[in-house]
Image (cartoon, rainbow, N blue to C red; front, side, top):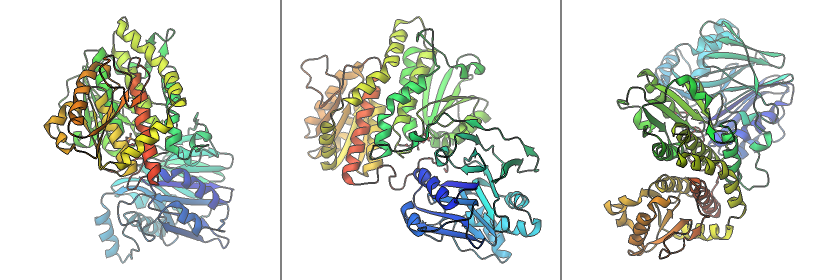
Length: 604
Ligand code: F6R
């Protein structure tokens, strides 16, 4: 939640920081602000509530002196999304931006008020500005002031701090929340995510927790927050292409990212198939020793749905039993997994607080942990025993699409990895996985957009949309419902087909639409009987799947090519994603930045 950017370099900084904020807009969009040195050499702070375009208007014609500048885009946690609560926050010469939550804010605020401090916002962040300002008065040095001001602060933070008395210098530090450094010729960046500065550099370094970075156009140095001991800086080049973080000819990032699904599969398979594609290799897992006795997937939202598919896939090919847990529930229960179990967190961002909390619990209980994430260097990669990267590239649309496809690719790979290599089913499934990107690409290239449009209009004309499915189609159904509600704001829910009779069928009447993905051929007859039950009660059913082997079954409303292995999961997901996308764009909603949501949920 929230995005921050810090810049130290010789360019005009207002333009750099505003552009970086536009790449971070997916993280929050309640309000935003920047701080920079103006022509008089003082720090100017400009803030605006609402979307970033309001800030851009407020900044018309503003230019800053080369040197340090900071920016923030907010997803409100403490205090309403007003201009007063927007960042940067200031206390004397200290101006800062913050992503995270200060847990002992109340106690710290009381203490500061007792000392005569006057607050001008309701945010937890302002507490940090006052504390660092007080420390600066004693220390006379920004780096020492940040270290002192943060001692005793509990919670999570990524901060970029500037001081009116040290133009050109910027201090960045993190604990819990992400912060990535970028390095280019004579300039440095510190941002919540790489796309913020990808236009200027691909040389990145995730800032380690509780390490302070001091950035200036002349150079960068790092030291430990606790004792000021130096820490070496090691930058690496990310393979991301800046164009990947642009919309290109698409209207929205979400649309572009749906069409990047095939590339996400190819890149996620890269280097993981050996011996002419007849064997899966996951060298990342070798250091964990023997295969697990049990797998517990922990995740939230769409990533949880990928875990549900993973369970079905892994249990098809190996004797390993698999549990899938919603991270926010799991983390407050006794773990009780078998000895030798692995707890695998799935997280696109690698920063979801609940998933990280669940993994921390597992580690404390002595289990091996694995992170499946799309963001190299994210917190999950540092806090687990092994990392498996999905390689979907930057996902900017808040609703996850290509990252989900990459997660499904990875859990499919895991199923094959744990399966018996000699088994004909495993071999066939591997061949289907290898063919799947080309099949998905061909499918997306020929998708009938008028049929999607018709379905989208039916969705919008319905009072309620129910998604149903059994087997593999159940995770697809709840993912389809999630996608639809998060971007259209229309009531929708997903159920296992067999559960309908136990309650939800009471919702069915004329005017209620049911969407049924039919990618799992093994349960088709059962799914068809659920569909007949709905139609008998006046509901309209839209089916998405290949033609049924039973000629007496009606043709699917949206036909898919015959599925190979589990690739129907990719094809049906693409249709469900396009359906939600099209319906949302017809409503005129902001598809890439749906209300109340943020891309990385770094708070509980
Ligand atoms: C929905 C969506 C969210 C995320 C969830 C977990 O489209 O994107 O439900 O899947 O917030 O996020 P990550 O995967 O980053 O842990």
